[in-house]
Length: 111
Length: 112
Image (cartoon, rainbow over all chains, first blue to last red; front, side, top):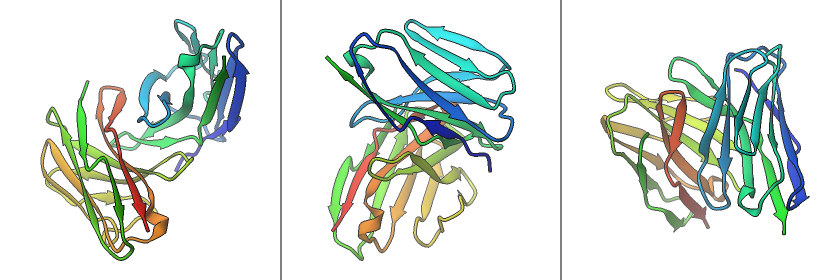
């Protein structure tokens, strides 16, 4: 099945700095989803991207889907302590739309 | 949206025993999913549970080790059988609604 590589594994930033996590695939993706998991919590859906070159914004979060639909990124502007958690990209595929997750990027925001 | 509850929230078990995890959804859904999240790792799909048919298991997971029941459209159970310390993980159920999946709070299992 399809796989997606995610980098970096860990990121420590000072509060107010920006943060970006990247997901890359060797094959063309039909879609990509992003989830956030707070420490001790469960993954929570953030967004789905389906169109080539798509850019979506949610307040300080910007999501991009590459033109070739093989990569995606999540950028957070001016991080806050509430942004702490692990961010996962995921591919929805199959008749049941089951998810294949990237390895995740654990974000630490230092006050 | 969907609200999902899981029982137990956590458990500590002895090796060789089995634990059954329950997942309850507040609405009727066709598919329910079971994931495993090992400490510090990502989520891995164990199986897809479709009401009225046998669950479909992903590579590396077998029914004898992780039997699943799906008696109705709002409930499912996952049993972790003959446990070993390597089974220590968080087990999460999820359901899809529209484009997104909703996850239960997870069951944190420690096997001694």
